[in-house]
Length: 341
Ligand code: WQD
Image (cartoon, rainbow, N blue to C red; front, side, top):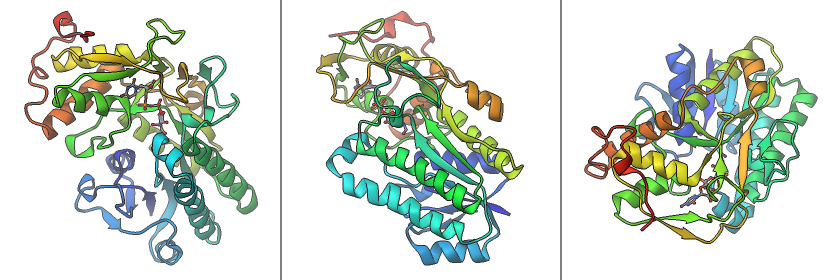
């Protein structure tokens, strides 16, 4: 029996495939390669190139492949892009999910793991959020993730699906260069690209009510995120109720602290300049992760240095010479801390 992983050739999807296989689970990978990269998957993985909205393809997969459950990661995930293209985001992230659920619900009930996001919280009133905190998404991307949770929950009630919705916080790192985040949206890839191009990083605001004025986020290692998917899938297989889970480290780091860590790990100080605040950026979003620990026995293992180091190493292998000090810099080497020009 196999797990059908949609979005399997994506940054997080490929890590989930690797984690499942490392635990001896069989995988069928589905990806339309619109943003995914087939080279992220081992050659012996059965990759079906299709969209989740391709009802015939999904129906035949569920019919003739031994699929025991679905792990659904296929989605578009850029906050900024979603503001420009809300129709595309609702079509892909919500209508696509509805097509997949329609196919899944009409066959024997199978466990369904849904990739959700901390973006559903929008700007939390107190910074720290648990799964019962108010959800007030502030972007079409976050709205599609919340609507997706509602849809999965309703389908589960109507058709007896066992389900989990995993709310990722800020995912960082890479198990290998091939699995690196090739996106240009999130902080760490943008800093590494700026380092490679010898230009300063823009820090979106240093006047927030935080310890150094820059925003606080809950950065979590991608391998920890992937491990949580295996645990959730197995819990559902065992008939356990899972529901909504925050996947974060439960502690926050400021933007300037992340730049500092990248400088320390890479051996190159990160030059930055302070730009205006980015619309929609909350000052602080940090997960309470007690429920994931209680329900799955999961806690993130990697600390900020671990995940930054894995991101730097993957980046350096893809951009030779970009981070010359990476292999030798002492983690605490103050000379390489970030600095403001
Ligand atoms: C982080 C911080 C920026 C770039 C993400 C997405 C999504 C979700 C988690 C899964 C912010 C600052 C960034 C730059 C900066 N995960 N920044 N300069 O905004 O927390 O949103 O949340 O779905 O990935 O919704 O992530 O990496 O864009 O920004 O100062 O060049 O870094 O202001 O405070 P964000 P991000």
